[in-house]
Amino acid sequence: MDTPDNNARDKESLKMEAMMELNVDGEGFLVNRDDWSPEVAKQIAANDGRELTQEHMNYILEARRIFEENATVPPIRKFTKVMGVDKKQLFDTFETGPMKLICKWGGLPKPTGCV
Image (tube, rainbow, N blue to C red):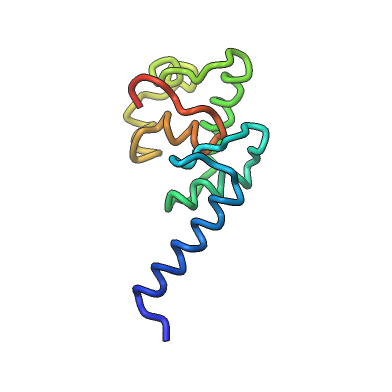
């Protein structure tokens, strides 16, 4: 019989299996950027207990474009200007540390500075 404890363990086991298949570091960031795809982004977000929306994906794709041009993750201040939004909107969308999640779900390196 499934109990809440068994269900939680089963979900945690599935999460750990998915993380191992993705080849991520201890914080859930992809080890190899070339492994990224929209499906991988959905899996990483799901492993974080979140559902990836089109709004999230729009931010992720723009951050990836900026990274490809500059070989660096943009600071949140620059990113909000490029996206034409304020920090509050990003925090409302991501609920916490928007640049960290954008980078994590987007297969980019962990941002430095304030995250």
